[in-house]
Image (cartoon, rainbow, N blue to C red; front, side, top):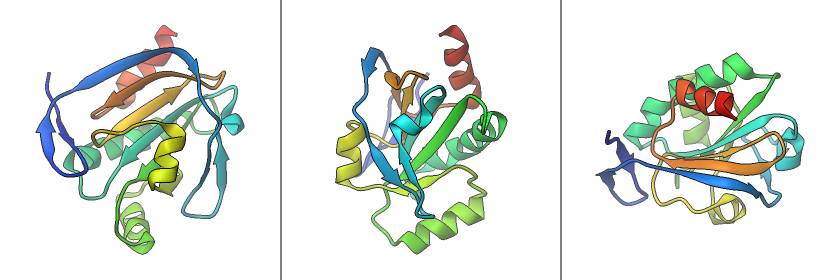
Length: 156
């Protein structure tokens, strides 16, 4: 099955799923749009999905309701979602977008330093999944769904 994935410069049809073999992730620190810090170690004991996206990316827009639903179902229990907006526009534009789309999970403004802390992104959306030990266990270039994330977690 092919999905439309937007790269930084163009859109193309491809889907990529790569499973990592429980690689210990490097520590990262992110500051969200509200000034709250998020570190990988803050989420030990929980799954963590880090999702790179942009306001101009159609597949990202399609994926947002799935991430909202995923976060709502697991918030404060066993999973955290953090969005990283790779928009070159203003923080205010992203903040307005977050409000307009009802995004309920923390969102960070993306930049090269943040990408370097987490991993390469060749397309948007791209998601990284960390297990409760803080190990990178999977990443996907292309859309994820609530069902696909929950199914992956149940298998582990």
